[in-house]
Amino acid sequence: MVRSLLPAMQASNVFTCKDRDQAYTRYMYKKWTLENEQDLIKLYPITEEWDLLLKAFPFSTQRGIQGKACQLGISKPSLSNKTTSCNENIFSTWNRNSAYLLGYLEADGTFIQDTRSIRVKFCTSLKDKAYLEELKTLVEFSGTTTISAHQLGKKKYKTLSFTISSRQWKKDLEGSYRIGKIPNCITEELLPHYIRGYFDGDGSIYKQGKYTYTSYVFGDYNLALDIHKYLDQVLKLTSGSKIYQKSNSKCCWYIRIAKQKLVSSLGNWMYKDASIYLQRKYDRFAG
Image (tube, rainbow, N blue to C red; front, side, top):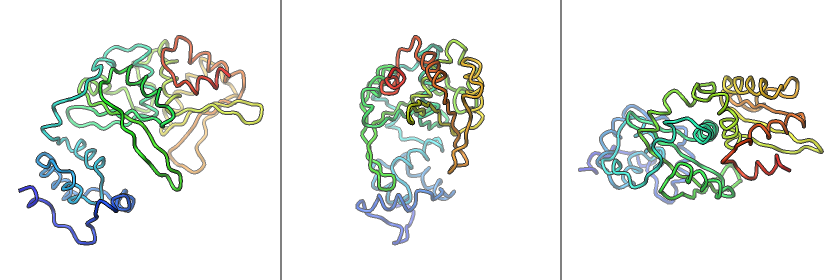
């Protein structure tokens, strides 16, 4: 029955498991057609074997098919029985921990949502394993982490990640993330923790010669502008900080703080009363 529903494929479009990496590279930018989506709606709920789905949609990967299924609001019945747990109410009340997490996820989280729930992926480099375990403890996640291998050009690297699916998180985070500004739930008291979370997700501190610099990277200019405005109010940035557009990108901006005194003030402000942070970045401020 399932096999009969599989859309007919041209021989040139069918790939073996051996060359799936090449297939993914070749088709990573291919858009799903309406016919593809209709086939997925038929197949996804009733197909338990991933090999069949990958043959039906050779231009995608398992992760890509799962993401499209979430976007279309379709799921497998077996997936509704959760085998892991987490703190479902961590975003129901705003405090320094939930503010930190929201900042971190704003910078470096992956959100996939459907009509019922949201899936949030936490991901770090392999060297930050202890930090990912801290995040797991913070959200009280009972599942395991996954190690993934990646390649960017000639560079090979590995990441650690875990994913949480939650209906309550979807409800609580509605209108609070990826909105192009600091969300209303982040009060002045919580702002240092939100900014620290964002910094741990997509910020850096580094030295050039005898001077220390810090920067934040943004995919949204309006959010960069909003955060820069608040940092200016708190730290009196004046001429010591600017928003730059990355030279080789039309959708990437960063705030760079250059003056040594301002960098020190930023660290003191962000880490005051901090309960969680990425240790290696904190050490650079402290050093």
